[in-house]
Amino acid sequence: MVYLVQSKDDFDQQVTDAGDKLILIDFYANWCGPCKIISPKLEELAQQYADRAVVLKVNVDENEEITIRYNVTSLPTFVFIKTGTVVDCFVGCNSEKLAKTMEKYVGSECDCGQGTDDDEPDSQTPLEGANSDNNVCAINSNFIESEQPDAPDDVIDTMEQEGVMEN
Image (cartoon, rainbow, N blue to C red; front, side, top):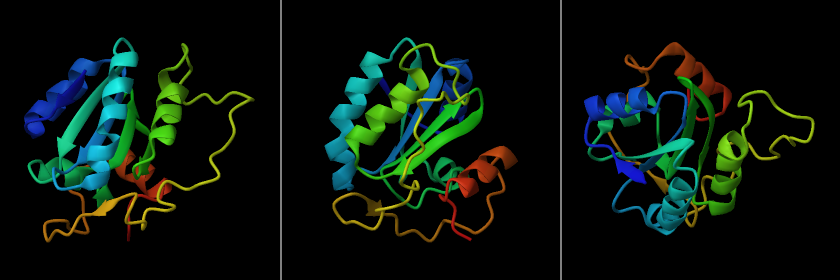
């Protein structure tokens, strides 16, 4: 089941309640076409991995503080968290990549973060192709600031390494 986050406190509670499960955060907006297109695939994956993953939908227009925390600037943005650490993220309406990333972290009893010899590195960076109008929606907001006061340092470091944060 996909859970629609209502507030920052609700989000924090859902993250706490997830325990050791993988957390997939879908940052979306009601006006975002690509977000609507990928939504059925997200629902399917949430049901498929319900025993090993928690899927949270965060409306960027209603939850600005969470959006700022993860420095989301394009939609849809998917952030994968395991045991409190961002392990992966990408931007865009790519249902195949969404399914493969879920499988990577929860498919078979995996040692998340412990790559195997048959893991191939992604040839694409998380934001590659993010400028395609068919793939993402840009967020045009005045509320995003250059500093992220509420974001844990490890989240910011991981997002910077993944190419999600702009300096």
